[in-house]
Length: 110
Image 1 (cartoon, one colour):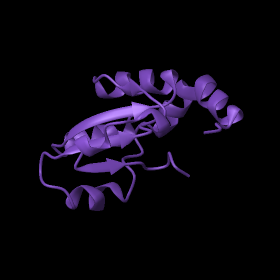
Image 2: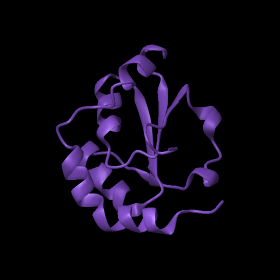
Image 3: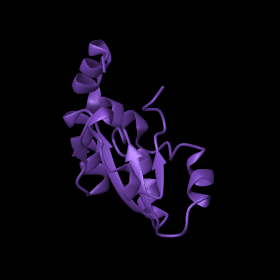
């Protein structure tokens, strides 16, 4: 898989500022509808969690969440915000999708 170097460098450089901009704006609007399709307490993968905005909402809604991001800097920002470990993993390296009842990928696949 080819990765856009400029995008990856942006997230490396701007992770803290990106997180600060997303603090306080709330979860992605479609998240509530997505979570409503799952059994309460189900396991959710937040694929490309960024700085943890939606991860926080998934936790608050009572789900078990695994958060991953492809950039270490973004993962560290998410850990600060969620108080949980965040795995640094690229999409193509993920090999355990069957472990989750649902996969949330808000803006990571655009």
